[in-house]
Length: 107
Image 1 (cartoon, rainbow, N blue to C red):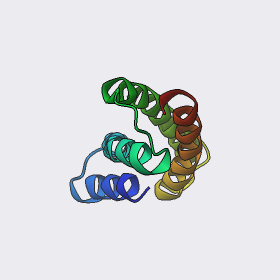
Image 2 (cartoon, rainbow, N blue to C red; image 1 turned 180 degrees about the vertical axis):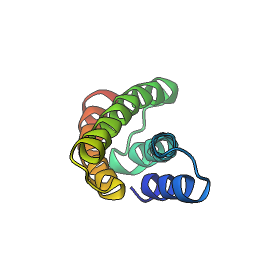
Image 3 (spheres, rainbow, N blue to C red; image 1 turned 90 degrees about the horizontal axis):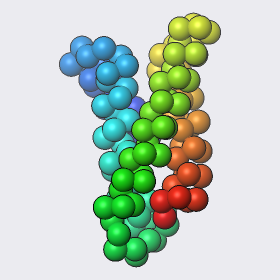
């Protein structure tokens, strides 16, 4: 969450990228980091098919990015919630999605 939120904030506020581009980059950085930690620590996975697992993880993460962006759009644009509060809610929703799908399909 810190990588996702932190990168999004830095890219949006300091690099002046569009908020949804910053969100996508932040999410992608966090997803790559999360693959390592999920494999090693959360699931203690020893499967040597890392390429296949990473591909599965990326697919789950891309769907998660779509969910993340949808939650942001609904909360920020339609419900007029602060972008960063919407981002926190989106992260919490996608954490549940990612954990469940990676538990069932990736690891």
